[in-house]
Image 1 (cartoon, rainbow, N blue to C red):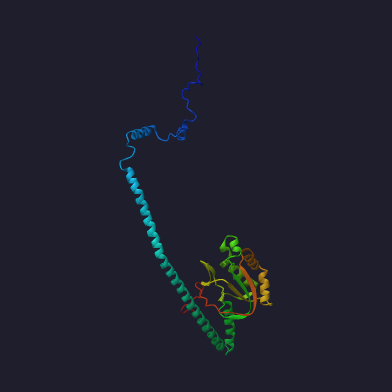
Image 2: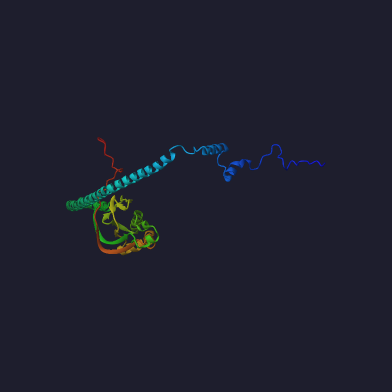
Length: 307
């Protein structure tokens, strides 16, 4: 009788041996559809066999609860819609009232500014007439005039170069690029162009009639451009007086040849912004308000101190 010997590598697992996929038993059960533990599966089978798969009345409560939830959601949506419709007229009325108040106060401020300009010119004429009576007064008048020109406190007039900037039309390049805001004139555009005019030799500059001073700020607030905290709207008309011996024509040549002139050409070609330059025989810029220095102050002399 032939004796068969068992191969340790076949039919019988050696002692201490583990299946290579033993650590993947959970994944194997999931792929095989064995999601539940056998004990849970056995308990579920006994419950189904005894007819106690669901608690009594569970189906009725579920069927009654779903419509109630849907009705509640519908009521909430209806109430929210009614509140929105009710608040729309109130919001529109408040917005109209605010716009009307802004326009009223702007008109009132413009009127006060015109009155201030008239009083300032009257004061300057009376001061000039008083200083003309003596040689010392004439020297003081020249010093005051030079200081007023440097501080943009006096009105000036003469030939001028006018630079006009306006937002790109809606059918222009801004919409073709898919960015409507790219066709707008921003505060930084005005800053660069104004600095270019100063560098080209301008002695006095104004934007939409607003005189620029050494401390004037050009900023953006929302969709408005602020010049000295005064909102301006497009088109923006930048008026520059002065220039070299050639007058406004020479000022225009210097400006167009500078980096600011190239920036203006870029705004026109790439973003569709309207940029025009014109030479006027005579333009007038009003004097700006008095400068109020908040930090630089002359020290007050001490009592009893010598000169």
